[in-house]
Image (tube, rainbow, N blue to C red; front, side, top):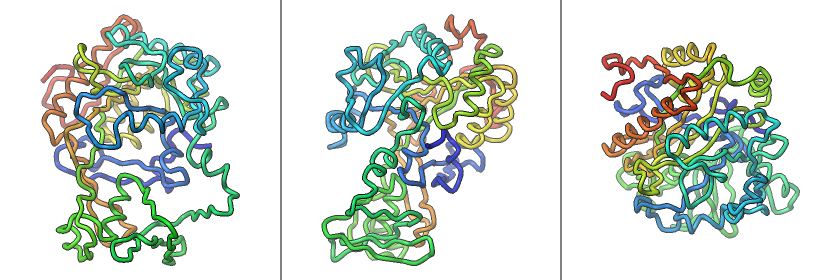
Length: 430
């Protein structure tokens, strides 16, 4: 049973820190973006925040990678899913899903006490002009709907570890090493024939393959592993004294999704004491009201410019403090401002993710030691177009406070009192 977010800064996570580029993330502690990845069986599926999101079958010509289009991925979405949401199963949206895969998908039911709050958030987005969806993962339209969670009906997390590995753990042809770090791919000429690993004891071992070697170490570790093995940009490998087996653009063109948190206070006590207790105690499920959706900056087209996961923290919620300090890693003064705003009022948190960024970053080696984390440059907002789009997206979501539903809640945007913005008047366009 995985928890909601206790693993984001612990021995169970690869808490990489992006390099300070002197431009982005300047309001975060030490000016670093913390890059969270699961360091456990199941990887990120065992430590993520449980929201299951798919891409849209809506392209504006800005993501053209052979083999990674929606039509390429769609069969695998269906292969993965065991949808258990009656409102979708008993509707025309059912054709976009499967009920035969290993990963169970659910939404919050009435028993959680969260559905009324989720309904209010969805009403606010409808009043802003966005379509209300029965199925947030409908591939053919933008809009907002109840978030789908990779958790079963009892609230237990479903993950690749639990739903793929556990059922086959007794197979004679399956052997799995825990607490073991892949340090190099072994080659015979230019053919991969095995993997060198470092065991928990510090012992180095080599395992040879009869058929193939699959590298699946994530967006940061996979390039590191390849470059340590001699596959990567020739100049970079040569500088580190690594023999070059293949001069390839490994680690280049990293596409990370920049996100901006926007917090709004609501009335006192939108969430009941029972809901707050559930949110605090039931960390095995997604313990907060949450919805999911995409929107476009151009109301006349269906370009998926932004994805948002709005959720509501009850008054005096521990999640506002934990999320601000650990997830977003914001400066202490900003987190103190959020905690103060949340003392007697609920907070609606909007995580605004920029889709299809033009900006690119890269991953390089820090040293020859595989235990050293790679150097990650996110490249956030290295394209002026991304910065302009993000600013417009944040302003669009800020208009929620003027919708009838949010007005009824007395919604106000929380001033995080960022030192970087001290010379500007809060709430003004410039």
